[in-house]
Length: 395
Image (cartoon, rainbow, N blue to C red; front, side, top):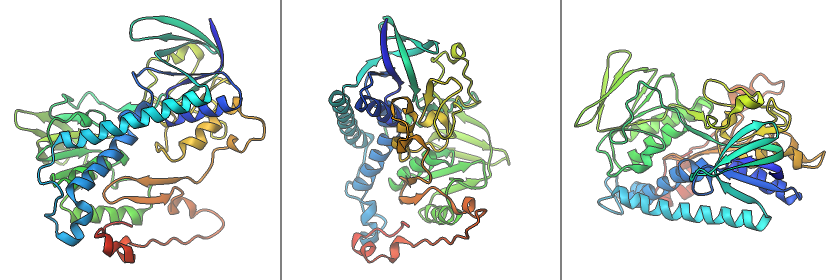
């Protein structure tokens, strides 16, 4: 049986940073990913694809220049799904190559297999071909990421109804789109398709979207979405979704019906922990498969097993993962390292159309502190550069 210092399960942003951090400090590291390529959810279905799709749409649609040339301006008259996927595949290939080079340069070994805990120091690895091996580790980091939440009441079929991973498989651009979920992913894709002049209806059961963002920013963002023709239904719970040969009908709790050609369900995500056999080590998860960790050390209920990334819950953002994943690799970090505490606040950018950036310590959360605070925001249209760029709806 092979023995290593650090076993990292998952090769997304959290897993890769923790692996490299440990390797730089002389630890033997093995990264296990059940996919066929390194990168995890972030590279293949999450962060990188949605951001690449956004940039492709903005370039081909001429969205940034419409302030000069009018709302009907387009760089390419007919934009197909193939146009979007061509750039996406090139970007993903590049990201994988960069990650492979980083692992090779730092002596990090990787394996494509499904990891399953046998006890607190042993894991079983099973490849796609059925080959089984065991590895003994001193410490482990769980960074398996998340998958789209798929309730049984939604008829996912990859033809009319998609989740946020499957939406990248679209064969043709929809003539109309309903998006259920007003979180980061839902608003990203809603605004991306809106920039392609696809009629979009965004449905959110809560009274607001992006509830972790300052209210003034959210209010302005909603105004801009509606100004572009998007329909937004807040406080609207979904009672049912039905499909037929021509489209999808979404029935709301107040009796209203929303009709569209395609539906994207993006209301939450669940941890990819189903195959880890966590019961064997005495670890528990919440209703969405998220792990509980110590906020300072990222230690789970098992002293030598740590967790980082989306699988531990809020915030499911790329910006804080590098520092937090290094903190999660504490066993390989000398005592007293500055990486041992969870840094706050953290920067985040919402990659929608328009894009917004802020530091995640929202004003409503800061008010109870002893020191009074003031906040200010400035519309991008007030910058002199905005006019020359022809792109004013940002802040």
